[in-house]
Image 1 (cartoon, rainbow, N blue to C red):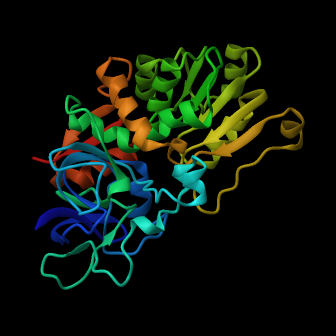
Image 2 (image 1 turned 135 degrees about the vertical axis):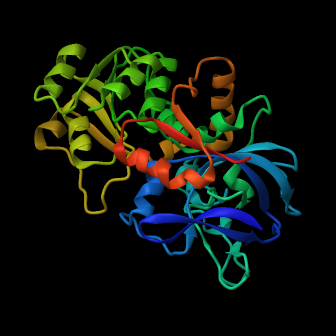
Length: 362
């Protein structure tokens, strides 16, 4: 049996116990060591995005492999791994054309004819696995294409945040934006994803990097991670400030909040030919667009799910960046908590003042 934070219904998580099945041929059983709290989890907990319940959220995790299925070749027991919600099948059109983050991953989940991966402790009912992982649990049972082995020198509490926030933010810079050294970047929203994007922009050799967040403490964090300038997006002249700093607007604007106003702001601060990349999970009825003059100015708008990652390659590189002192994960992590404090962690997130909270499993 394993202890887990279970979403029984919209609103709050309840601690309980579950049992996990034995790994099938391509599955991996992982002892969870750390899991970050992500705003995407909060969307499901608060009901903004629907999901079957009961379910176990959590998708930004690292741990140690305890058992593998008979056909698993990518990891072995004892390996330290980071998990990634964008599990990929490896043979669909998206995978074979190098766009693994777009894979729908149907073949990485169990069929209805197979027993569920997670059950109530008494075996009475299944518990839904959320985003291929369900990491708010002492153990995870995942497809082998939902995890990757990493250097054992990497601290697992830092490794966990690479699984979503850093993969999404840094991936947007390295993959989706393909940033050219010297180009200018604005990042709207300085939570975990936004801070990772700022740090990655510095690593990639961006020119001016402008952080936009209404919280002064988050703007200070952004400057510590590589932002050359910071702006309060709620200021009446926020757009004018960015245009003035950059001499005409930014080459890349990255939205890392998931709000209409922040997406609109990302478009407004673009220079001619610039690209706005939306990372945040918008309300389901939200629409973001370009006006006629934006189109005539060659501006572009794109989504980038999970930073358009290729995580079996990207995650070990990000680990290497940390171990070499290039990627600053210590500043991104605001607190470490136990599983029993998960609801308090999300309350902290709702207040919006801190960066990342990470659950550390004993």
